[in-house]
Image 1 (cartoon, one colour):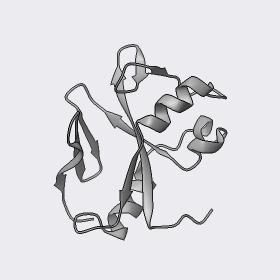
Image 2: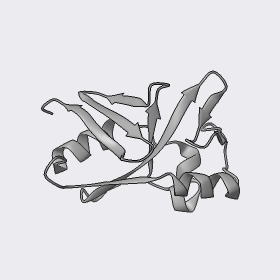
Image 3: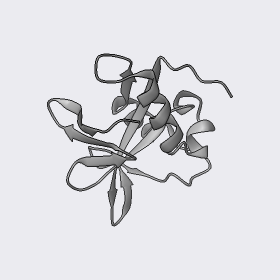
Length: 117
């Protein structure tokens, strides 16, 4: 499947002892066959679109696309098709290959470290 390199939509999910949760605490079962409409709405509200700009090149987007999870349940749920999961730790940071991101409640997603691809 060919994907455009002009953007990548991330769904940040916090990893907890009880499983994956959205920023507002809604539990998300990534291995579910189907995701209910309330959870889809919560995921849609928390989505982050990365686009090519001064900090994010097409190469970075492609590297992230290759390394981030694309759950089957997302593919089976029309709106979430193509969206990738950004696994966030309790420190509000996510590391994907050479990239480290932080999620801030006011400022959103930030790149803390982005070594060369």
